[in-house]
Length: 366
Image (cartoon, rainbow, N blue to C red; front, side, top):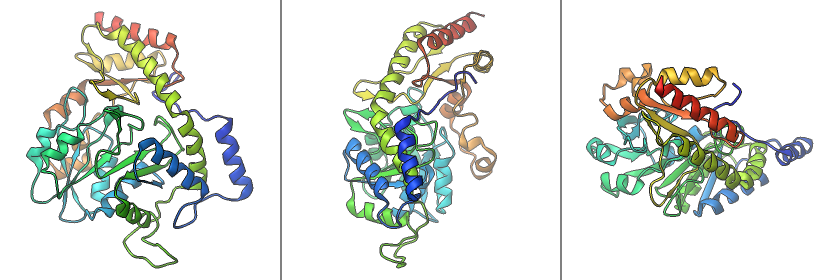
């Protein structure tokens, strides 16, 4: 694909850091505290997020699973999650033995609907996992109010939203824990990798044990844990990527603004909007196509643009989860049938934006 939906950027600095680690033989982290680069990456994220602790792990899925484990979520518990997202959110709930309960989303921003969350709360609800989808910002405050405050943990899935804020507050710091991903498609990447943020120091200590087989010193397993550690090489890349984050976001923002100017009057197209007080990282630029979404998708891809549908089918309609639940999620189904994400990463040029916009407007007139 000439212009993929997302494309990571790694420069000489990342290559040099990895080379030095390979030459020095420091390929992974020390068991308990993490290696030097892991600690440096954690500290960089902690300062960005303005939280008390960050724990680096080997993937965004590990971040979700470790968070649920540390919060004591397990068999017999229910965790409310959206279906309109990547399957890792629900899969992590299943991995710890709990039951995912699917809530609907809002069509305005594709994030979890607090009103439906309130309808899904039961005496077995142990946690809620709002997803900041596409880099949009879920209404975590309203979701916390919907579940009644105390007793139900809020685990933010911020895999797609590093750098997004609401009233200056970073996603991943609005709930009890926040979970991030650094997969190659994300705004910054370490290849694979993830991180957990929290303002609960005691919980942070438990998360460090969970990522290292439950150990604190030696082989003294204190809690159930796994090997979820981030390797030094990934962390070294992450340290350099963090320095580029603001530039990456600004490039995406410029492309998003150009695309919006071109498409906001197009018939049959609804463009994404930042609500007042919110600042997106523009991980994905997702339009709502009233008619002919799949035809438009084919036309864009034929011209070399990696337009992609996130997510069709939604999780509750996949073969595994369809057997487990017959929940009705009308807004999720509507979004799944009409959304289309367009590339706006830093490698996308102004000419690319113009051509995509022209193709979309021409398709609407066809």
